[in-house]
Image 1 (cartoon, rainbow, N blue to C red):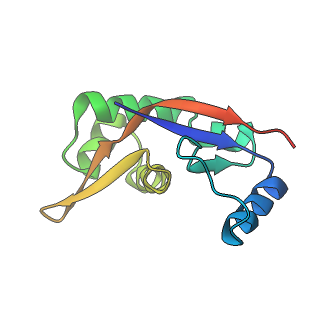
Image 2 (image 1 turned 60 degrees about the horizontal axis):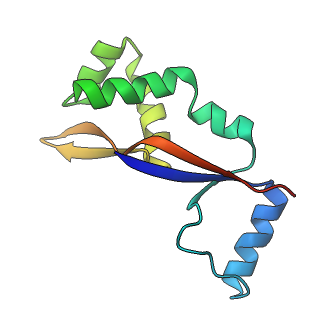
Length: 118
């Protein structure tokens, strides 16, 4: 399973980083995180206990649809859809369209965290 490298950096420092990249003053190294959070708290909201349990469930059970995942997880489809779309945005899950259904596929279950202080 792929390890996803994520970074934590204060929002103001991240804004400056983006401006420096856009202006050509900074070129990110290939091994730097592609996904950044402004705090450990914001990362923990995404990778909380319920959500990591959901990732494990998807990987082990390999549901064919969101409906099937809702049934086996006991989570409401609307809540599940919102969580999975967030995961997809961060590259943790892929939602693959198959026969008019969305099939969740786990892309990362291991996370390497890099912390940059101000």
